[in-house]
Structures are given as structure tokens and as C-alpha cells.
Image (tube, rainbow, N blue to C red):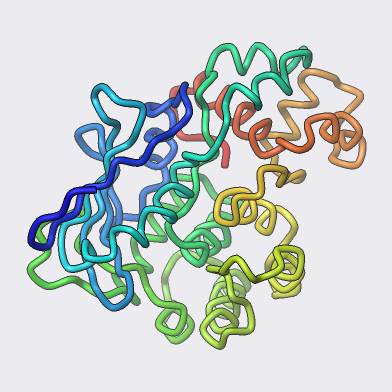
Length: 306
């Protein structure tokens, strides 16, 4: 790690191969307008840590097997603490050779692994942000969800004064701010607005500690999130997969995943019928999901799936 005044640079290693273009494509398709951006081959966002703000920029090292994370601003003084959440977000601890070996004999997944051997499960900077995105994205396209998320940021987020990067000059709304925001004409059905603000209130109160620490029981957290109105199993598994780094999470009711499996075996139409087949992918079902989603995204040339 190297540091200068209000600037820190971290080199965070990974096990090769690492598919940077695809993880960047995934983040680009879901970037929250005003908060995060993918530009010039890098991921960038505004961050806050321990009361200090800054800009995080992540790009691959041109020669070494590591990513380079630059933290510009007062948050840079917390660089050592920030290494862990950055590594989680970019799935740096994955062992692609072990995962590939697990799927090597599977006739469905082996070709997908061969096509994208360094595919990662993209994480999330904030589990709260991810749940907001998941609720907003229910029954709408990725593009439509991104538009609504941008409106939420404008209404309930906070603009950062004198921020050097215009595309990342907003803080994502806090749970308390989102719970209290005026959602009129936001572009979502009333029930979904109620679910979103109910979830935000539960997180603000501490009843559902989404951005968990290591001591929190993930099973209990799953149950607490699932108990909230408007939150279904898909959302819980999606959050477990991306924010809580559960490598075996499986969003069984995801339409793209169901269709991908049914296309391979027409007798397997619904998750209850598909379970025996998907259980064969344990304990790496989250990576199986990413490969199936990625196949669709590669074919469509767009950010689809997840």
C-alpha cells in the first residue's frame, strides 16, 4: 500500500484467471446514476467510511495478478480497513481452478466454464443498496430499475460538495432518509414503494442489520429479511449471493435461470422440479447462477440476468 496526502493506493491480489471485462460489464449495467460509474475501463464510486468520504476507483493492474484500488479523499486514511470490503466486492478470494474442477464433469456447466474461466460473482459495496435495487427491479428491466434508482438518489441522497467526479457526486440515500422520502410519481406501484420504505425503516432501526459483521448469523439474517413485506426468496438469495458472499446461494425463482435450465431439459420447468439438478452444483451454486446469467448476457450483448 502506498499513501500520499488524501490518497491511498492498494494492490489487492487474486487467483488467476480473473475476468475483468465481464465483472465490469455487470457493474456497468447496474451502476446507480450519480453514485457509481464505469468509465475508461475502471469502476468508480463515492464512498464513506468511519465518517470520512472519498472516491474509490478500481482497475486491473496492467502486469500483476491484482487489482489496483485508489482511494482519493479523507477516506484514504482507512485504506487498510477498506481492503476487505473491496476484495469482497470484486470476489478476489475466489479460487477459479477449484470451482472449475467442481463443474468439469457437468455437461451443462463445463462449456460455460471453458468460455469464461475467470468469471466472478460480483459483490456489492452495500447490502442495503443491493436490496433497494432488488426491490425496485421486481418485474421491470435492468434499465428501468436503473432509471428509478437514479430518481431515488436525487430525492433522498446527498450531493457531495466540490466532488471531483461529476458522475459519482452523490451519496446513496441512508436507510432513514429513504424511509422518510416522498415517493410520489417515482415510477413504482404503491405496494412496492411500501415494501421499499418498510425495508429501509427496518434497516434504519437496526432490526435487520443488512450490512452485517462477521458475528451475525447469515441464516437469521435471511429469515429477518424474508419476514419483511414485499421481500421474497429471490431477493434474499440474490443478496446472500452478492452482498453476504454465500457461494452456495441460489435464486431459484429467477426467470432467466429457470428458462436456462428448462431449455436444457424441458421436463424441468419449475424450481421444485429443478432442485435435484441444481443441488448437484453445491457448494458453488452462486457461480453456476453467474455462468448461466453470463451465457444469456454474452448472447444478448447486454446486461441481462441478475
